[in-house]
Length: 354
Ligand SMILES: [Zn+2]
Ligand SMILES: [Zn+2]
Image (tube, rainbow, N blue to C red; front, side, top):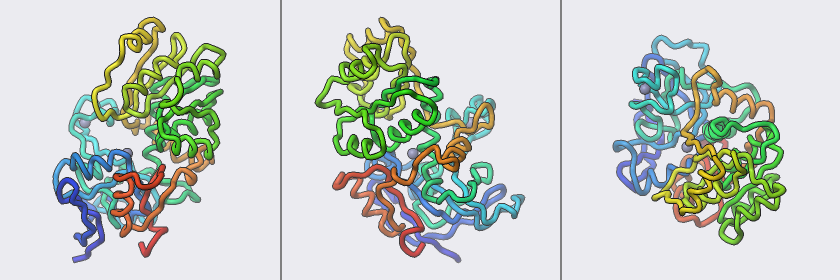
């Protein structure tokens, strides 16, 4: 039987590089040779604290690959195609699925958390989940389609308008993606806040000069100084921290919009003053989750891949660590222990034997 190398999560914190059977594509599926797979911020608690839906599971949901084989009923012309992959497998039966709102499906499957993902040489996915890539995009760039689509969705939820002044609270991988998108889509000003100086320095290196350390400075005062005292039209909370949420509310202009995107690691309480910001300024506060994959009105994954191909997003500088599959365990440990600065970490066949 053909085998492959894969990082298998056998229990919480028990991730091992193993030889496992190479998967075979079922009906409607394709077999992908993985070209790159990023580590999502959510993978660290998934592997070390919370675990996956069941064990054993191969994690990894931000991936790209080349079609190597197709299952029964699939078009053989797909073989050789490079693609990004939408990792969510909708049930296609619930009310959300009926209207194409797959991110809110009540019974979805997910590559890399509920079923096997791409911390492996190969993975099988339905052909429906492939976003074929135009020539010239690398597997590494395509593996960033997920965070790019998540960022698009957040800005669309926030109704980004031409000329908007935007504050992004949280300068991690998605924060920088948000910043790039906001600029590409006509924001007149993009401000970034974080509590980590190394992240702010990295944002500056990537062309975003207006950055503030929220631990040392009052974000509202800082924002007002940069917006003639009015505040931003749109603030995106990307840290999942109550102080960050409150900063977004305080920095928004009257009638402004605040998008809640950051996954919280604890309670998200507001002070009375923070709550008043919503009331007195009549703010619109919206949540965002994942991304849209339905064709109408817009498939945000196709939008992401197209924007990469058009050079509207600068993806390669966001990838700070590229490792071979065999080195992924060490890279995950580095992220867990924060022993080095990182923005996006990924395994890629460009490193090592593949
Ligand atoms: Zn992710
Ligand atoms: Zn569903």
